[in-house]
Length: 127
Image 1: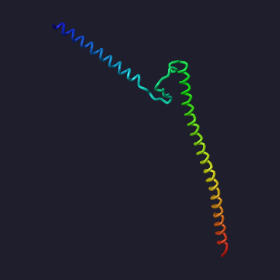
Image 2 (image 1 turned 120 degrees about the vertical axis):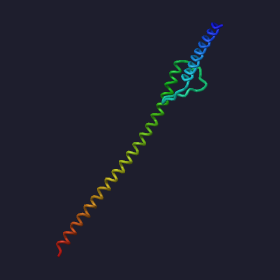
Image 3 (image 1 turned 135 degrees about the horizontal axis):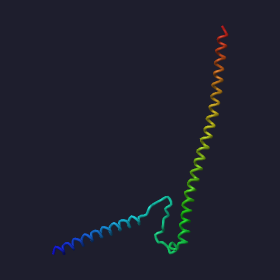
């Protein structure tokens, strides 16, 4: 009786270990089958066609989708660059205008400074 009980305990322990390994394996499979979104993630159509199983067609499809994704990103970068160039050109024009205005103000300041010096010298020379 004790021997039978020991065998049952051993069998129960082995079954528990096997169930635990199966459960861990299922958890790993669940993790492996999750999708991961990356910069170059390419959506796969839900009804996968027979062509997708053909390695040459699948390879061409992958590169076509990758090229399309990169082309759209490149277009966005070019658009951003044009916007930045426009902002830089606008800022440079504004800077040039401000430099011109600064030069005008300096000339006016020198003119008024010379006027005040002349006025002082004229007022001090006349008794």
